[in-house]
Every structure is written in structure tokens, then in C-alpha cells.
Length: 272
Image (cartoon, rainbow, N blue to C red; front, side, top):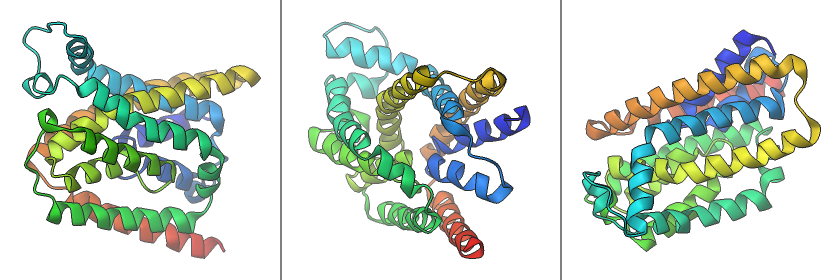
């Protein structure tokens, strides 16, 4: 893979992993648009590891506080929203289980679905309309300090559906949180904290798969570039998106998803 292509794909992964637009859909569509070969499992590992570094780096202090207070340790002047929910770690554990199970059981089916552009486009549109519905229906009266077991279960089950390209892990978890009357910002914080074990688990599994057949010498440079670019772009994207949600709605992402879905379906028709 040329270095410039690794930069482009790493940038796309860093942007779309954390914005509610579906990274898997964008990475699935890019080869069709530009006529590129499939980037292969090695590059997928690189960009997923990069986004893991991004979310760990951005939320490192939050994770220290979440883990410490779950075991009754004092964390000094931590975040008030996290301090107001001492069981947050266990809620994240509860929410992680559904996606972990579904991901292991239906990984192959999800990969096959990524090759169906009609499905990718349709899911992008449907998810955009669900986001719009959540914006209009959710009361957005609760923050991270008010997340309950029922919220964690709902968001966790919703996250399991993100194995389908076009859904978006951040999109469906934030949307579900808003349906549960969490604020956009509170839902996003829970979503991103929840993404850490999921992205980490996927990265570990992919590293194991790569270990079994090795990394080709001519792919090392692209592998490293993919990690660095997706990590840097991912961290900047998280920072932007969290600030955006303090004062803005998801309307622009609803519009983007619908237009993107229409474009993908048109591409599928053109190629058939």
C-alpha cells in the first residue's frame, strides 16, 4: 500500500470512528470509489489500534477516576459527573457484554454485509433518521452522573448492532442514550468510554490474527503510518466532537448520513 493511501485511509478512520457516520461504511466504500485493492487485515489492525490510542489518551484521566472510585479509592479533584456515579465502571462492564458476544458470533456475517453496498447505504439512511427522531423525542435531562443499569443495558444492546457496516457505533450508542433522555454530551461521554474496551478487544483479536500469519515487510511503513495518522486525527476528532455537542445538535450528521447513504446506493446501482 502506498504511504499516501495509508494517510488517506488513516485520516478517514480517525474521523469516522468517533463521528456518528460509520467508519466501517466509509472504509468499505473507498475501494469502490477509487478502485483501490482491499487494504487487508494488517491495515485494519493499524487504524483500529490508532483509534484505541486516541480514545485512551483523551479519556485517560476519566478512566483513572472511573476505575479508582469503583474500588473505593479517592481520586482527588476529579470530574463531578463521574464522581456522581461511583458504579460507572460496572455499568460500562454491563454495557460491553452484548457487543462482545454479538461481535464474536457474527463477525463473518458482518464482514460479508460490508460488501453489500445497498445494505450499507440503507443502514446509513435509517440510522440518520433515527438520530433525527432521538433529537426530537429525547428530553436530554440527564448526564453521565445519572446513567442507570437500564441505560447501560439499552446502550449495550444497541452497540451490538454496530457490527453492521453503515450503523456507526458512536451513532447508535449516542442515539440510544438520547432516547433514554441523556443529554447529547452525557450520551457521547458514555459512548466514548464504552468504546474503549470494544476497540481494545477488537485490536487484540486482530493482532492475534496477524500474529498467526505475520506482517509482510513491504507493509511495515503503511502499518506505522496508519497507526500514527488514525491516532492523531482520532484524538482531534474526539476533542472537536465533544465541544460541538455542548451547544449543537446532530442535525448536520443526520443530513450527511442521508446524503452519504443515497450516494452509496447510487454507486451500487452504477456498478451493477
